[in-house]
Length: 141
Image (tube, rainbow, N blue to C red; front, top):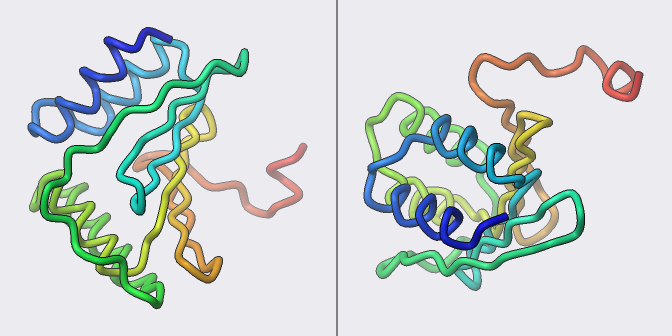
């Protein structure tokens, strides 16, 4: 993992210069297997398969207080809005924080993201165009 690539991906996402699919491709090429966005600390931690990690600050100047209760519909609405490019990444973060998201983890090769609230509530979002397994058992086979 190259810190300069991770910094550039973070910066370009906030500047609307790189889409999520472009970011995913770039991160995979750089050896990242997953990352976690901590919306309380406004940090992203990137993880490589060999255990290497790197932390990037998230420059969200006017983020709201994270709502006490998790709103799955609020998270889904924000996801739909960013996927259709009706909002940018900073606004997406504001909306999922207002919907009670404290963090989210993106599993690049698993092609999914998991959004988590204060009380352990969560929403699993599969990457657009990828199919979720039919059952949990199918995922382990």
